[in-house]
Length: 399
Image 1 (cartoon, rainbow, N blue to C red):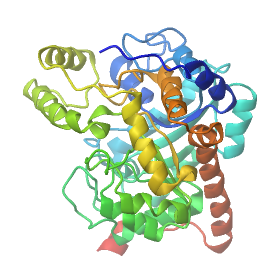
Image 2 (image 1 turned 45 degrees about the vertical axis):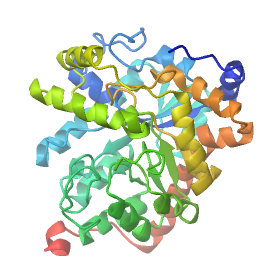
Image 3 (image 1 turned 60 degrees about the horizontal axis):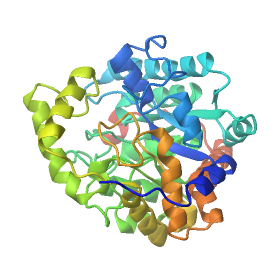
Image 4 (image 1 turned 180 degrees about the vertical axis):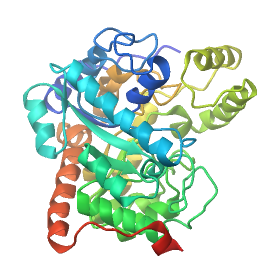
């Protein structure tokens, strides 16, 4: 199917020069781990890596990305000390990237850092931990991640924890346990954003009840548009104006296109039949996925599909509470027009076609995310005057 190029594409590119994308979630560090064991000579993102990755420096520039939360995700199969040490390796990978490409990437830990990187025309590089298994039930480990530069933590990944329920697993905590609530409070005190992507709806609601700072959804879309548990229900979206948080729409086909849900289920079963994890992005996994797709053409969303979610999210949550989180290099499939990180101008052009104003688009791409980071920092400064680090344990609070 041939898709017409929007007449607003050049206008979109110009807008992204002034108001670049703050993207909430990119899994490049895990892809580097899986494909090259962090060998940056083997996968040099200064060169075109379109054969193996969604992300390289040239395409980040072409896409108008001005700040990127790099996910320091580790698999939920890793637990305890193994999860913690793997998270350390992921953090190290982001720092190695920034050291290797200083003309393009600049580590950022605050909203001011993000703005300073923009002024230097560098891509601000922030970090987000994807899943509370990375702290192994330890608030001291949470603080250590913050000191190393992690600025959000997704409370769960695909598996429920003893203290927080995931959207894609059986509940264990009934939302957040007492210890889970303490994790949120300590994140607020640190200035670490509470990320509610991946979590169950009850976990979302509990976190919004407990938090004293704005939350984010680093890569989630609207459940009313595509009824998938990874997406955000309308009652939760409607709470964002009071909270001040931001929901960052994702591009993962199985989360945004209803027709893709059943197809993805079949593709996942095919991966398991080959002894592979459906989330595996290695060479053998990509081959199996390509063969399955050749025999079973997949339903393909496009920029308009993502725009449908953003239209709905804007209607329910308001223009000040939405953003973008593509999940590149964390999914084997991407939409047409948004195949990789160079695709953002196509989405902005689609929204211009829909008569979104440039002021509203500037909030979507840049200022909402920067504001939330700054407000979390302000809340932390206030809380640190009122209380010290929590030394609570899961055994004390949850029994």
